[in-house]
Image (cartoon, rainbow, N blue to C red; front, side):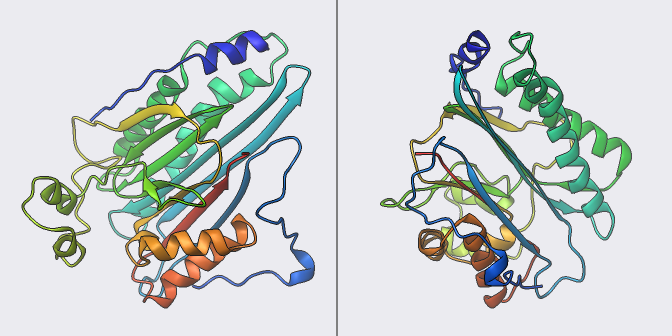
Length: 296
């Protein structure tokens, strides 16, 4: 098993391919203090979702899988987190986002997760990045075939030990959040207005009110050639990873998101407060948030 883990952790490959929520009653929730030290070190996860206040159905989808494997070979946190925001009208969008999370999660479970639990101690044939890439490409092909006219964004984070692989298409986002620093976005929006900002044609303030701010030039199930963004990096020593759809980041300023995360009792509480904040800001779109507290 140690050989297996070493073979994965030794990979330094990096590749760029271009309804408000209601908290449960207090007696039914288990509050984990933010600063508590857990043994073994582990990923603590919360998630929340809302249709918003201006949509009549939900086209967002999410997936979380968190495991801690601790044995005589050491401690190996594992996490897979996916947010997908469907498009293409009623049915098409929600079907596309559902396909995206199932196909990518299925690929990771088959090719990596089951290998970690195997007694054969044989390393996976592909790197983390290659497994994620294959899953995203298969999701794109499946959506194109089964949901003509439909599409979806997708942002996925795979954590294994001290490595993190991010796969991204569209304008859902992944951030790192620390106690001291401002949020850092890990993904690049594949939207028309973001591209115009990058080219210096419009300002960030102009992009926020641009009539085509929701137009994407890259999405699962939409267009060829298909070119997702993928990269593998070192996992931050501490802090949080936030995945969300544009229903959150497009309605709540970064500084408010940062404050709500750090002030919350735990990731579940933070996600409920984030979704509530987006709805209080008008809830113009479906809202999805996944928050992962890192082991450090």
